[in-house]
Length: 438
Ligand code: ATP
Image 1 (tube, rainbow, N blue to C red):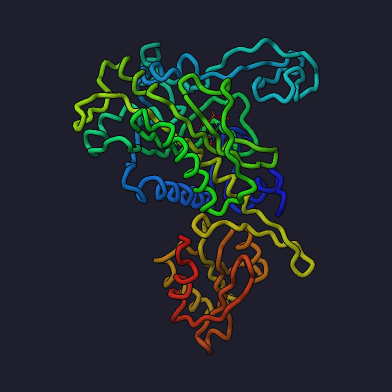
Image 2: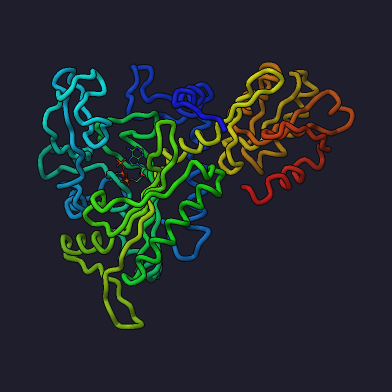
């Protein structure tokens, strides 16, 4: 196993086009990041794997895409306006600001080292505020959503009515969320703009505990099914004093990041807190009507809430591998094929027109099936190195023999084994290799 540092991954991500610092030409923002050609594919693949596992692969969960900007009342009812806060302290010596609950030592400034220099903590609201429409006054204040979950709760009755769902059932959503974090950092781990993958599972209250246990296992298994190493994952139940005011239980799926265990996803039993709160504030009846028993009730909610950008980062860390090959260090991202941005690279040995023509034909044949890249720059060794570093599972090399034997070499990223395969059967061959993995 390779212990990878944050800098190593951040450098590789930048060098190869996964992640760039946002507004880099203006000095960078530090709290947001732009995803490059490979990063955008990685995010799409993680998103797709989650959607497949949570929505299209099941018959008890449906999807939703709600607006980022909602009525301000949504965030009053949910409790975010009053209590979505972090304790902020400022060092009176160096004027840096910190989140008190994340400090290693509450008495020492991690920036300048001064002891007992902090101001008393102020509750800082993490929501981004803006104005809707041309008048900037109190009445036009709106918020960028700090989580996608509330968009689901306020559409509960719509979905029940139109999708004819009945508990136990879920509504899933993927999208951007915004939090004015006091201390963004650790690369894309904590940013002020990020993407979440959340699902609210509505159940009869008596079944809540059972479904909570069910989702803990399901969610942990999802990371494992995408190749994350078991020793880098753990489930951690929250202590009673850590629980949010609405939660009857909460556990995190933690990943072993370079700085230690930290949260990838939270799975909470949110009880009937949110539906009740919105029912009260809006005056709408948000209970579920059970025809079978002629009863109306508020379902309990089990919520697995994951970070898309944060888990993509964890998948990168987990896949990073260095090994000695013939006296040189080979860096390889052992990404699960489903997550790999490029599935197959086509590499003509030289830029000679006769090889380029064959390579182009192969690329055209493969493209309808997989995301492929044809790479003609630099030496073949360097091109293999690049494909290893971006996690491409297979490279197809077209050489001068190909013109004679109508065959190409398929190289496996992980074993580096090479196999000669007839061009006419290449799509079938690769389909076989990817079977059950994509
Ligand atoms: P923390 O206590 O670390 O601030 P949280 O417990 O408030 O986070 P949740 O509200 O449970 O986080 O959010 C669910 C998931 O969304 C998190 O597990 C994480 O993967 C992701 N997430 C939350 N905040 C951020 C952020 N600032 N940047 C990137 N991802 C985030």
